[in-house]
Length: 219
Image 1: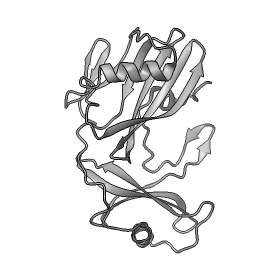
Image 2: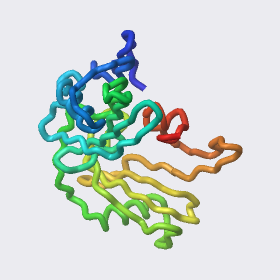
Image 3: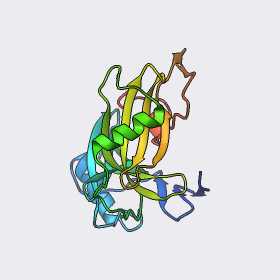
Image 4: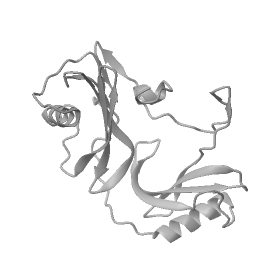
């Protein structure tokens, strides 16, 4: 990944965006974890590069843990979810901010009207996998998102999910909603053997300290 710079309690990426703030005890005078989180992020939105007026942070989860709580917010741009982009804030029992993990995408600038229909995106994904129409488990699905590729280019894309016996897997494909190009394909199927991932085939962790450590919220 991009080189990270560590300055004591701060982790900054190569573009200068703070990605993690540790060892805080920031008070906001707000009496709920979510309000405290929003007050803190609003006060520091410029530093955290969350100040794009079309960017919205939606509260996904507020989880109580011994001694405090975690608030997870996901990013939307003009109403479209930004894939993998979230902010996780940890608070102590006094609702002071103790840690921030910032996976939001700064400087999103993508037109959000697709040229392709959902049906077309599903057809492209099936053709790409050489898959038949027979889904196993859940139905095939496509949802509009903003996807950042490995070269940091942003695309309006469909996240397509399809489970198949042939080719075997729980497939996730990102199809450019303008050009129809398949941007990324992953098999999310994971075999567990004594709690270890045997066959992840490109399984990617989102860098959230609890899930990356394999811990459940509230565990």
